[in-house]
Length: 481
RNA sequence: GUCCCCAUCGUCUAGUUGGCCCAGGACUCCGGCUUUUCACGCCGGCAACAGGGGUUCAAAUCCCCUUGGGGACGCCA
Image (cartoon, rainbow, N blue to C red; front, side, top):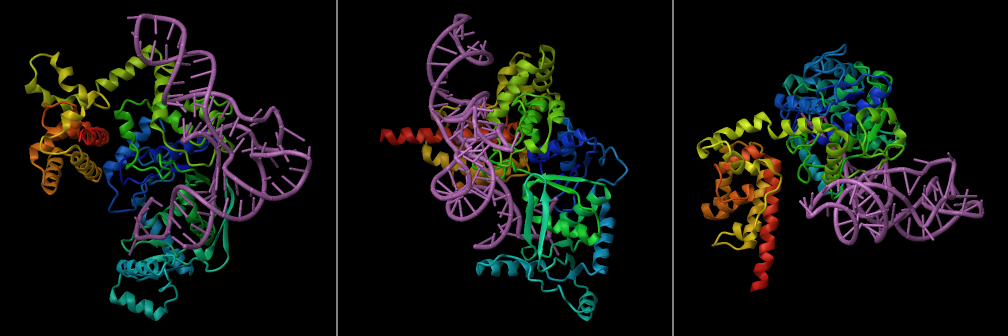
């Protein structure tokens, strides 16, 4: 069993979800759980993300038997360090005629796709370089044209594979594209790297999210091309947003770091996640990971995509507080959460010149320690603006911050000032409501320092609350007229 | 648009070898009890088998169609 997170963003709840089921299955059947970093996207992968993902999984107690940090017999466990292996396997397929070079540029293919969509056709590769003559290939290479290696998918027939949860899934081969295996930068795509590494690492059960079902035929055909034994495929249901779409940070707090910073217990998060699409035979809701492993079977997985409900996860967390942990353990949790050293240290420069005695601290910083802050509509309305305008502007600002990657004070200040200018608002008319929205008070340390320490999820939540407050104000405004 | 997957209360789900289910539990919400208050706890309530055809003595459970939802269709994973 393995989990292959891609270090291209914050540690995602979906990663933990899949890791959890892989681990449970491995533990149940005495198998090994492998952590393999799938960092073949050179542009988006970052070492910081990798470190954060590993830290988050460890926080949850989802420990791996083999991985980049602990090593193991099938290393290296970072795909970027296995490039040579992937390349060799791509060459093998090239030699055996199962793959070919494609010289089409990205622009060329984008244009092709655009045309196909225009004509309401299914966007797909047209096989333009699938049967190039050797002379043509030589000529292109002599020209120094960059190329990718594509797999030669059969054009007819059907590929059938067994999903252990759903039974046989069959997909017509003509529906499947000639997948790129090796990119022009020499790195493999997910499909090649995944199949090659899974085989080499002795992965017997591929437990991954449902979104991979439609590309599984490619993987099956690859196994066959290499003449390898196929693993068993288990596709877990996809975690969903409230509206049913694939879970995303737009609609949900999906970063595992958020849960930690909001004071969730790792055991409670794991417990809640186990109940997503799975149930105990006796319908118990509160159980340990060991209990989960003991009772785990695929038969108890239900396939409807479960919606992630932070409300219910909070209830689970509360259950742990009052029933699972004893006073000592609960006290320890509180101590480490409230007096988290990193957070306390971050506040030091903000409060030092503002306090005379230790007792001033709590009053000065309480909004760093609470979830939502209370906002009175009347407090946030600038004199020269309407509630309606405020609501709309805040909404646009919240959207802007969602897309903001750099959350440092300087960067926040820059984008915010730019934003205010673009909105044609007076700086003070925007900054005061913003300060109240974020801190719940009219006076605070420098706003952007505060926002950085609060972090994206909390700022986001409070901004949304302020939008709601402004809308409420707008309603009353309308009535009075 | 094409292909694939899925379908029980608002949400998570039990139910799946068809009958014990006019569908059970949990979250949320609403009552009540307990409590100086709040919370917890306890008791109670609202609330679902998407629709239509079959198969069968009998269907939430099996089959088909429709509808709905989701996913995939990237030199991202």
